[in-house]
Length: 140
Image (cartoon, rainbow, N blue to C red; front, side, top):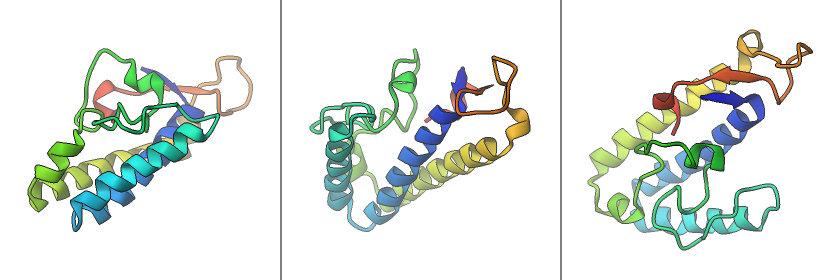
C-alpha cells in the first residue's frame, strides 16, 4: 500500500499513544480500556482526527487509527484487538502484544526518518505528501 509520510507520522503517533497506554495496561487492564476510550473521545473532538465512536469495542471501532488503514481489505491483530479480549488476556500475552506493537512503532520511525526512501510524486522535494510502499503485514 502506498502511504504518505504524513499518514505514517499520524499512524506512528497514534500507535505510540496506544503503546504507552498498553504498557501501563499490563498492570491494570481496566485502566487501559478506560484510557483508550478517553483517548478516542479526545480524538473525536479534534477536527483533524478520525471521528470514531468512543464506545467501540476494538481499536478500529474506537477510531484511533486512520481511515486509510481501517478501510483496507484485511484485519490485523492491532485493529482487531477487542478491549474485552485485552482484559481477559494473561499478562504474558499482553506483553507479547506490546512488544509487537513496539516493533511496528520503531519501524515507522525508522522509515519516516529515511527521507531517501520516499518518492515525491510531483518530482519536487520530500514533503508530507511523499509516498512509500508499505507491506500490509507491517501496518497495524
